[in-house]
Image (cartoon, rainbow, N blue to C red):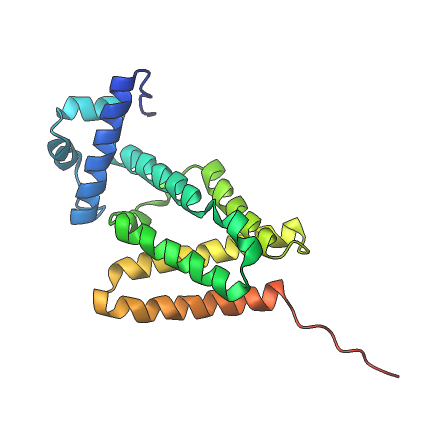
Length: 204
């Protein structure tokens, strides 16, 4: 069952409030324990009003994940310009630091990554994120082909997603060390794939 799309500004505000409530409840309780009743209560809305816009928990979760994906893309968009003046190490540092900042300001993210596959953002939105990462890598190395940039961007995006989940699960005292480990992983991968060593000529 598809959710109702608001047609008026008042409806859009209500949807935003419901998504904010879902974010808070999922961050506090986790995906499995979160209920539609708890979300409605957090939003101070009648349960019928919640179901009017979101027929199920999976539906509101997908809407929240889609909103997160849009915000994630907007966060990385400036890097497509900044990457032109950055070396690979600086680019990796920017990517990881932005990711950590996003998780810090979106506490429901780790729990959302544990939600069923059916609640993921639409395929088109996921493709936008992969393309964004490819654009960033192409800006850093314009000589790279677009197909290779998309391949590397897809792998880099999944490395970042792995950090998203692990970072949210770790106690604060262990997070800084893990951030450095992921920077090393991503830097090693991109350095090897974006700037492979020149082949030695074999003389007869």
